[in-house]
Length: 260
Image: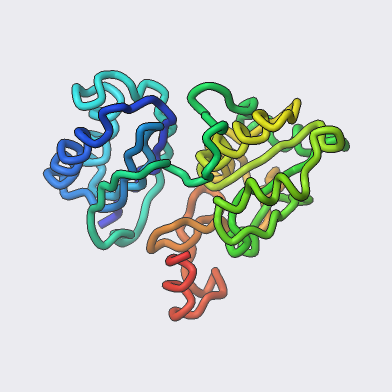
């Protein structure tokens, strides 16, 4: 069986997020879906896998159903596939943030950087005055990144604000183009930089996954593999699942990478 995998998020005010947990968990369980969903006052973030029709039903409920009452009308959704179920169980958790940065001034529901579609990304990052910034963790960057991108060398996203304070200067770095796996970390990171006075901040809409889905390999400026936080470990162009031999990972390192 080939499983459909849905990665989704949206920053949106959900003051009733605690009350949404059990209805969402029950809905997903009823469809035999597995994966992880985070709910917070600032929005929703999840990756869920299951049968085609089950994922379609979830996507419809999130965007159009009564559960969220139309609030997820700008849901960022990316679909891919997996040869085996990439998750062991279903988890719906309540969090303070759907992606942890720890900066109250970084509010993507109020202000974020300029979105750049995958088709326009190559031209943007080729500009000589553009700082191209990878906002992911160091072990993710080591598996693959864009040509010429700066690796902040962080162990987790919460360290990004310290990196920005120490290494980035609004007077020097006037134009910044950032990217991450699916786009969610860039929403927080761009909001953080704008709050600190950076003038021009761009980010790749839909993240690396959307780029790998839409940009032909012959035209790509991506080098390597894109790490994903599930049993598939990494994806390549066309969002194709890569085997352990293609990744160059022995079996024992697969779990170690996934647990980061």
